[in-house]
Amino acid sequence: MPASPWLGWTGASLELDNSLGLPALPGAPQAADGTSTARIWSNGEDGGRVQLPTSDGEKTFVTDGTTFWAYDSQERTV
Image 1: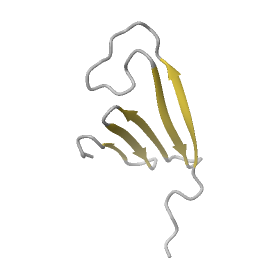
Image 2 (image 1 turned 120 degrees about the horizontal axis):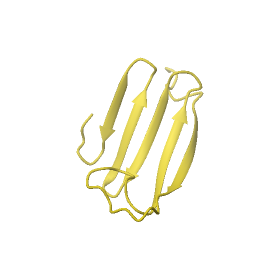
Image 3 (image 1 turned 90 degrees about the vertical axis):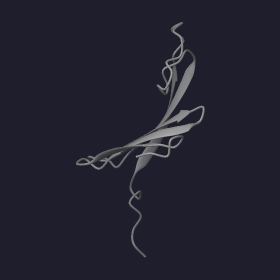
Image 4 (image 1 turned 90 degrees about the horizontal axis):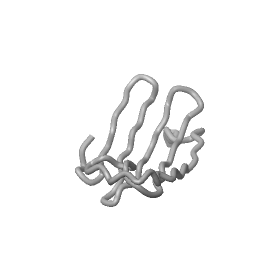
C-alpha cells in the first residue's frame, strides 16, 4: 500500500474576528464583518494547505514548495 501524502503533516484551526464594521465583499471568502475560520496544515518543510470555509463550500490552497494550486468547491474548479 502506498504511503499517504498527508502522513507527517500537522494542522490547526485559526479563528479571526473581523468585526471592523466593513460590509461583506462579494466572492471574497473570509472578507466579511464577523468571525472567520481557516484550517491550516504544514508538512514542516515546503508544503502547506489552507482551507477557507465559505457559505457555499470552501476554498482550498495547496503547495508542495514547487507547485501551487487552488480549488473552489462551489465552482468545482482548480
